[in-house]
Image (tube, helix red, strand yellow):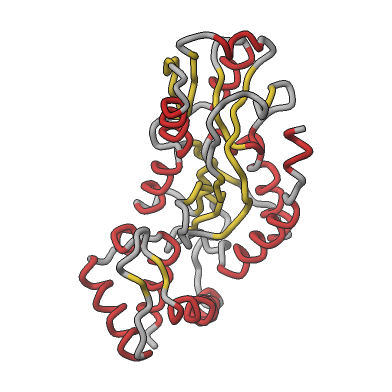
Length: 291
């Protein structure tokens, strides 16, 4: 099997899209399609279920992933042994603002412990959608994003869920229209929260939408609005409105996604190890936090 075809296959798996994979590895979609077709002919199996959205791996595709990662990693390790690529430059990491305080510090610490050396991180905070664009354009080495349901994108860091949060003044929940402050329209909770309030017959006013978690927390803290965010991002001084008559918010997966041509220190084996270690370290009893 051709290494570059396997690399294209993994780019599709990790991005969940032929279009984004093509952008990352600087090939046309038709060229990638030809590579996948050649792999499928070699294996006499379809690798993707093209009838489903988002793009889903077939059983054969699921079996190929681990083999492909090992083959590409071994190939790249051999090249790295003779490479003069600069390993001292900062690792460029993107992260949504709501995870920057709750999740990113532990992730950076895990990176440093795994690398067993000093390294500088250049961190950009933006929405998951914008971070994917930066990955595709080569401006980031790695990004922490919220992935779509049923997607195989990236490496799992944490299973989480959306919750409603409020400040100290519970009378705000009785106000109509109910003032709501949310992340911008690229956030999974934005549309879900507004649609859910409508279905519950709760008249709501979108007071603010923003990419800034600090803004949302400040508005909630000052009793100007309620908000919705990931459970792990809720600070201890704000209240999780678990007993209020508010619509449920969806569960989410927080994952790491690497650029196809990433920092030389970011190898598949490193990312796999960090994913496993971080997932175990962040497994908590979420019910205890809600109580």
